[in-house]
Image 1 (spheres, rainbow, N blue to C red):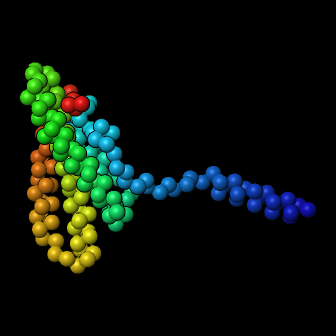
Image 2 (image 1 turned 30 degrees about the vertical axis):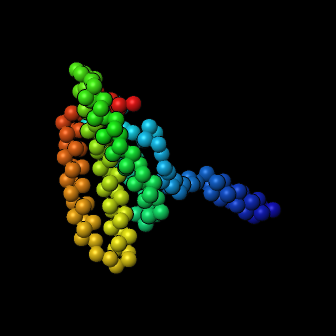
Image 3 (image 1 turned 90 degrees about the vertical axis):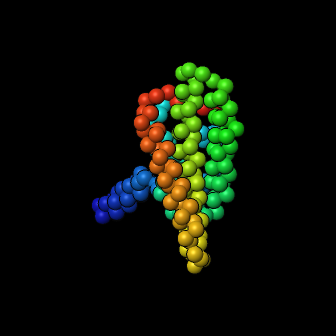
Length: 169
């Protein structure tokens, strides 16, 4: 009887521990979002790189897992590019003073967002080409060029740390 009680208690304890153990969640798929839902231009400058990475570089997701979502990334990157030319540029031209300054800071944050997306898309294209045994030199040249632009805009954002940043919307 005592042995049966111990076995039941031990089994119950094991089930309790298993149920209480944390469950590893699968990373959510890279979702296609409207620009307003992923823009990072509102707030303050100085952390655009981390904010853009949070949008375009899902944590714990292998490049191979992102391959089917490349179109979503490209569409979002294009939305950020359109925001720059069709939103920020006219808004900055029409504004003055502190508003124009905040919009310019927001435009830089948007450039970091756009370029982070472009770098991520190029990394995926390179992975696809390598998997297919194709030459990646043109893609790698494009990646180096975009990475240089990204680094320049990250540095500009960091120099503006703490300044008010505003989206055109």
